[in-house]
Length: 102
Ligand SMILES: [Ca+2]
Image (cartoon, rainbow, N blue to C red; front, top):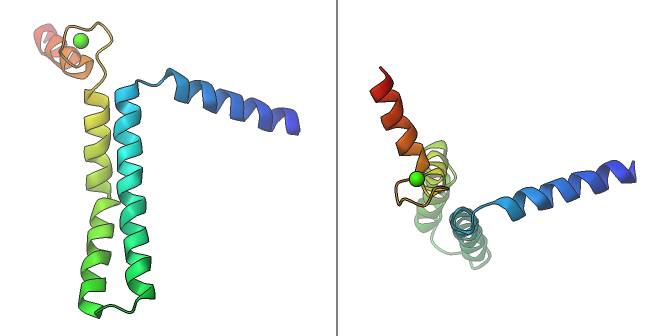
């Protein structure tokens, strides 16, 4: 049981270590933004601020953690992958190759 958990942690750590630092920066930045927004929401709740402000903040949080924003962050993160180092993201290189093949 403990061996399985240990293996899981080690494999997760290896995956994080093999990630590009740029992608890590995008993901960490996104998480920090979400956490800050949620903390702001709770802080505003504790201080009994105006209800109109609260619903606006909640709408903003819903927008930021919504599928469109997650897709956008994923798109940005995958666009930063450039393993051959020619300055063109590998994702777009593949698309051009596919079009030429047609
Ligand atoms: Ca490239």
